[in-house]
Image (cartoon, rainbow over all chains, first blue to last red; front, side, top):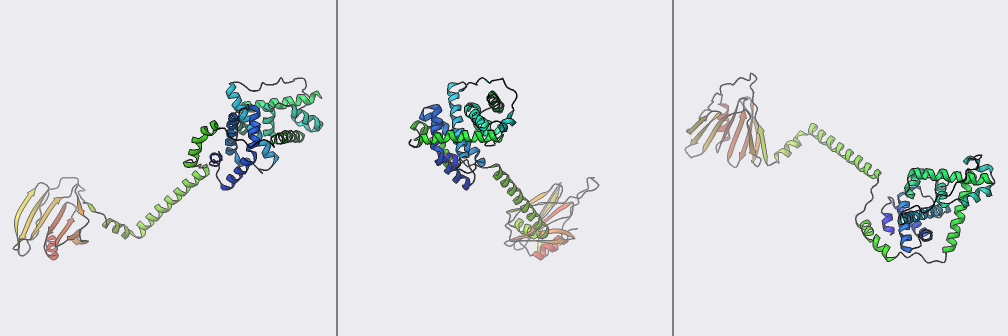
Length: 176
Length: 218
């Protein structure tokens, strides 16, 4: 499998780096995908899709042996699995949660004035559906167009998920 | 915002730390046969023929091609200006030369075509004479049976092809006009053009005899 991905990468240094990433995270990605898809063959498909996406965007990958890279590849694998699941089911895998509308007093810039544990709790409770997009945007620093390409989504959909994710977090903190 | 980033980072670190702990004892994934069969063709293509070419590489190749073309054109132009002899030598090595003859008629009025006859060289006599609307041909022969053929042809729209494998080729002047002299084995040919007619003398004869005949054409 590695042969296919390596053909998509230009320099030998990057090929070596990709090879390191492949052997280090192949197992993690497979089991992350399998958690969504159950079947080994479907999980293999998802991991394959995820590696192709990573190979296409490989220039932005930093140190391989880091939690940042590990989290990134796992998020990509999970979303590749969700994408396959959605296609197989021919419907949205995850239903949008109801967004509480009862608090307009906080905005995204007010996270720093709230107790950190409350922010962490709100983030952990946020559905993966929104949280992965928020994570890729705020932590990994990808633009909405790049996220859309990586997760096989429309750019509008990514923006909508970002917006809703922020609203859910703000609403959750406002409740406290 | 910093707290949000910190919280997201911690949430993901924790989540995937737990996943890694859970799968630590699990075997490395073995891709099922169905999946491997499915990707086999892609794998073969990747191994054999797929070459990824970046946009940068394409632009670099185009730029190099343009630079090489520019250098070649500049070099050929420079040689053509400074060493035209090289091109002459190349031309000499070609298999056939094509001559286009000069035709001068500034008044654009049909001029009367004047037949001109060279002096008959000593030891030769005229054995045949043909004339037609745009020219004439005269054949001379000596006692040994060697002949010289003289021809005069109207030069309008006229061109001729000469075999490049002649032994010798040079340029001389006949009555002030440029003439081409070629030799193959013992046969000579002199050809010149005065702007109205093309004259040609061919035969197995002395070179001086042919040049004298040519100069006698007025």
